[in-house]
Amino acid sequence: MFNQQQLLFTPGPVPITESVQDAMLDLVYHKHEGFANVHQEVMSHLQTIIGTDGPILIAPGSGTTGAEIFMRGLVPFQSNVLVLVQGRFSSRWAELGRMFGHNVMTLKSAWGEYNSLESLQQILREHHFHSIWITHTETSTAITVPLKEYCEIIHACSPETLIIVDAVSSIGIEQFNMKGYGIDCVFTASQKGLAAPPGATIMALSNRATEKAKYYSEESMIFPTMVHNLPGMIHVSQQHLPYFTPPLPIIAALHASCNHIVESKTHFEDLSIQARNIKQTISKINGCDVIGNAIGVTAVKHDFAPRIRTSMYEHGIIIAPGQDEWASSVFRIGHMVSYSPNDIQRLAKTITMICESL
Image (cartoon, rainbow, N blue to C red; front, side):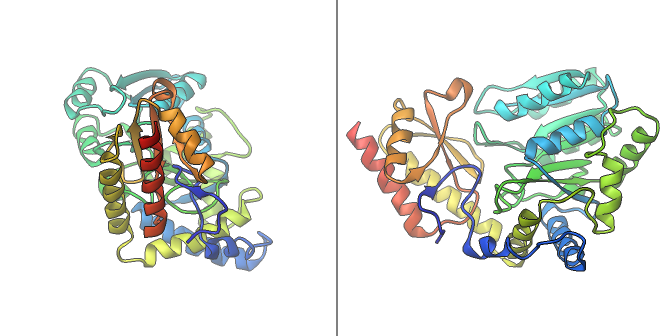
């Protein structure tokens, strides 16, 4: 199915199809009218996938680049920020907030779990925050949080608080409705559920966030920057022009991959069924304890997790290691795009063979 010498079952970068690879050659110059046409279509597709009619920005970088752009350009200096932490990547946003001089409070859950609705409600009764940072799917633990319910609580308890969502491992995979949930900012990346190569961060803003970005910039309430100036990025994106030289091959790839997602009537259902089948199959293998409800990634606890990952690589299949406190006890399987039945069968047979030999 994929033109890859080795089979990637990693939570990003993901395998890309030949049609997406071919599309990367289509855009060669960002000041030609062809760029504006492609950009407009990509924006429309991304709005559909994310569930918004607000501005969409594409910039060179990773998902973390998008987080940094929002943390610097949308959060005034020394603001009170709440970060919901349930793994390695959500903890990164707390660290980022402190780097920019904000007053960061964290609401932490144990690895493999997410914060309860009651704990979120309680902290909002006791404290006021400029913004709340939520990681929709925590890649390190394979946990997807109840985002819609979180947003309902925030709107009820603290309607002035901005909701900023890390959707790096959920956009294009999990059902998502930015406008319906009342989310102010979303950042994601090209190399996961959007099924394109790495190299671009994608950001979406509500009208409220757009107005605040302009106000904070004009009043010099945020850190100045040339390349990642939010009001400037928003303005040129709405004109379908680049702010600086854009990642042309990645935008062309997104044009092809997002078009496929939007046109498919069963895309999200197919990924959900695939995830359920993979989790059920792996859970039946000797010694494997499946962790996580995420559609795009599965964490597997095993006494010999590092040895399994090494052996899988030797058999031509790349899976991801556990991280931090799970480094020696967990391996992770990414399934953020559709795989062929043969690919999934090969994955299961190889893990089974390795586990039986341990």
